[in-house]
Length: 315
Image (cartoon, rainbow, N blue to C red; front, side, top):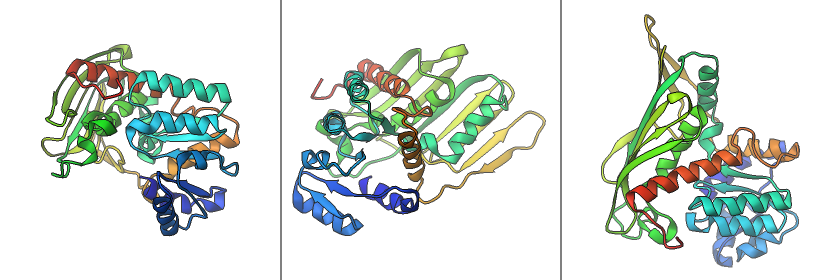
């Protein structure tokens, strides 16, 4: 993710975004990354990177179980932070991260890039203007088989592996952005031999009586898509739901309308532009992805994991 994001940022240099430094667990790795991507400074520890006074914003792209520690490190060192999804392993960690950002008066946001893409923005606008009527049900999910290698990160409990935190979060966050946070959760799932959730299904209740059904699996294959059903229409978000570019709007007595929303580059630049906008305007969180909503998504995943019996080592 770090490599992909850096490549995206290169196209934004004219707007005032510069990739100044990279930090890793050892200097050789950091220097190799810096050489590949034309980055001026490389550090052999995250602490050294955090102490660089010429850095305004730190992008955290380490494994899930390190997000809290590395976010706190950078916030305590005076940096604004964009932290990869999942924002935290659980809501307790999320609370500490949010509180630290507020104590230091720094900007903090989860790097849920899907929330800032053109198609996602268009969906929210169409729902807001009543195109689908009152939303009653959202159904979405996807499935894929990870590499057979036993050390694949998705199968590593110590790294926060599993289907929910890596893939399920997209559907939970997507739904939250459309109909609000879950008020009630019912879930089922399966824990694999590696100790992580390899499959999960959940039903959530939302404000105004809306429901959502989601699923993810590491045991079979299905393209990740999502359908939004309202009282006067429905919208299919074609796969991949984490970076949608095509929507199909269906309404009674009308032909289906296919909408196209291409993305610039790989799509990661939109979240970078949101960070740039917020920091330049002195905002401490994004109005498009508030910290309270990010925290609520983590709490929903906590409840799903509790119901299927998935706990991480730190817990």
